[in-house]
Length: 191
Image 1: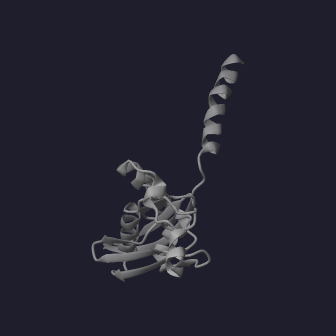
Image 2: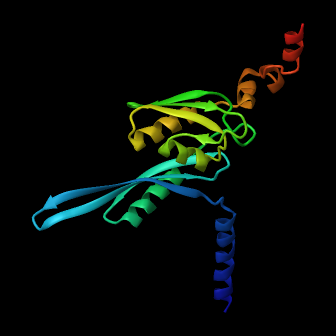
Image 3: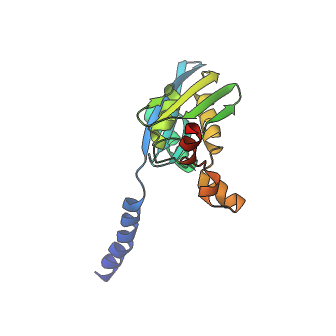
């Protein structure tokens, strides 16, 4: 009896920890079917590309291969959760500045956008932005249309983003010293 109560006590906190972990959304970007010809016929395998994010500034991607589609997706999702990166978002909806990313022949350009613009992006890039939680962005893929390269180029560009807070901290200044003054611009235009 005491042993059982002790076991339940051990299980309790673990279950709470699992519930406290942030819930991730995932998006299947591509599935590729490959076949291998063997003596008895053909053997099929599947490769899945998945993007995972918490829609609050964290995103990751993974790829998985297996003989069955669900197993390939599960492997890709696990890998994506292990490879997550954090991206600082401006007002929780867009990027802080324009940037470009590159991976192999895949090149992408991402630009910050005013509120209400929405996500203007191609398939694989759109999946990354939606899982990241970006609501307004304009982007263009130049070069390779391979979804693997497009996602890697997008992640490469997002890694380059720097928030004004991080730049100010690195320079030893205040955020107000780094950001342009908005109140003075209209006064100069009138004069």
